[in-house]
Length: 540
Image 1 (cartoon, rainbow, N blue to C red):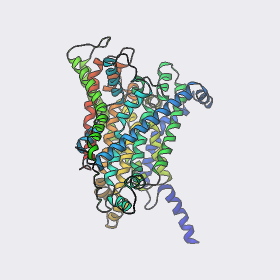
Image 2 (tube, rainbow, N blue to C red):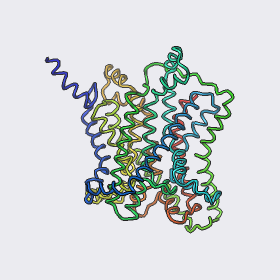
Image 3 (tube, rainbow, N blue to C red):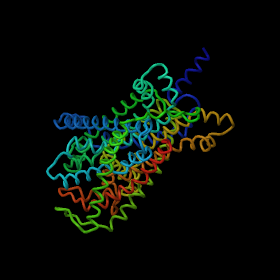
Image 4 (cartoon, one colour):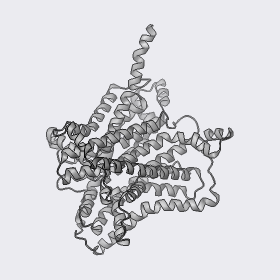
């Protein structure tokens, strides 16, 4: 009985903070502080004066809300399906077949991350106006699905490649030796082992779609997020906008639940469990040329259209030419400072987010339990909020409690960190889980303390995940539009706000936007290539 009584509180602690050595109190406190900061914008939605349950009920009962919710759900389904097929399918082609030039395809399939969604939308609309002036095919659900899918599928492709290369061929060989066909082996053995990587990538994709504004505004596809922006900025009804944003948070919570169910209890491959043998590459035979053409058919529109249209517009701008109907003069003196400000804000956001994510990812990876899961899910909710709601929340908090930070770079960087912290947390979590707790335990048995184990064993093994998370935060911070429009310090501009100033209106001045769009793409190429290089190490 005494043993059972002693075991009961230990079991309770394991349920709360995970089995094994208890998390350090400072780690728990830091993780809780990060979670609280991430939840502050969501709390603003319901605690700010002017919001009430009757107002939420009124917003839900209006005829427009069900339609917006349905349109948002349809877009999530279509983009989710396309990115899932593209991400996993291309990863299989690159890692498991004799597709020619696999390393080149890894780079090409990563580069769409360098193109912001609104830049991609602007280039597709510009191409349509220039070459198909009477066509409206690019607008609506089809255009939105095309543009967003081509820009977001790398979030599924990259983790799928890493997961496929981390699998041991022995599992598949055993299945084949038991008489399973190649397809059945794939569905019953290989695919279940990809659940963690693919579900995490899909969650990032769907939350990006849920919070997207700029691209959908250009492509004339209204969703809950565009409606929130319209009600706050155009109609001057922030209370109604906040009510719709609560619905958005509910949709995000549902996506988090679905991702958790899809992930199940699967765990990623670990480092240090022996040598992993690669699977033999499947010969494509006569279909090799056809599959190569299929890869070109993905890379060409994903990269070719944005690069071509941006280049044509830049040449036109350098030559002094004007697009018919354009009204905005090109302010070349604004380009350099905007690029430097964008880079500085993105670098700071990447650094701060990496540091802030460490206690959250450590708690979730090393001490899994109810508390760790709650903290990790808390940081994801902010990722689904419309940028304008996050910006209004920070303005409200800044004016009331942190007035010296109002309209300063610190507030904009804080917004980026809250928005994109989940990208760092997810990547660090994968890195820490790959390192394996058994290595920490081995180091402790050799007399290493916690700090020495962290510095000499854990961080070196987890560093690929940490670096990947930092690069993803840097990329998304440089591309962020909506939050930047409201929080950029007075007298400053970034590439995204400068570009939006030339395209946000009745006249789309593609020539004036081209220098900023080109600079945004070039700025994103470097971190995107660094992400590709990390993946290239896995591809033969």
